[in-house]
Image 1 (spheres, rainbow, N blue to C red):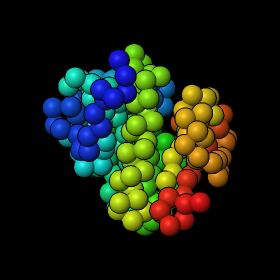
Image 2: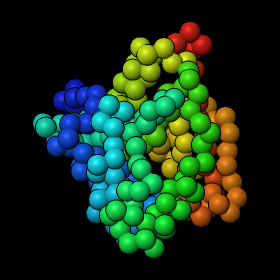
Image 3: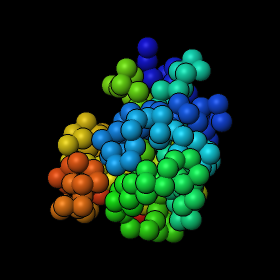
Length: 203
């Protein structure tokens, strides 16, 4: 199978939402470890709280193989109300989940000229096929077409494969986060912020 068979589509069709969330959870499960028991909890929490317009997805023969969720100023893939966890889980577990999500929110607010990659996740069996690269390139095209000047993302230091991908696409580390709360939230010693200028600011 080659990457020419991969279709990159904008906007998650509702029939793909659960699979998109499952792929996301499987890729980042160790970050969702406070209050979440498994991927079913993650899907249950976010199923009705995603904005399909803030997502790109990759399909092969109709099957979902990769997801890229992004946010721009005022718009993001996850539109979770504070009431949602309490409506779906016990008050204790809802508080734990919200605490987990707050810990993960270490990024600054997205600037008006910025296109922030929130999630890039590919099913394990399709890694190495260029799907992540195809999703990133499509995201950059969308960002530039909407007048954005900067791509940004966060990645843990241990995710060497993702870092190699981003560096190959000319992303540079501009900031790092370390410390107790970073380790508690991500189970990583370090989170990197990587950026790439696009449009008129690109070299």
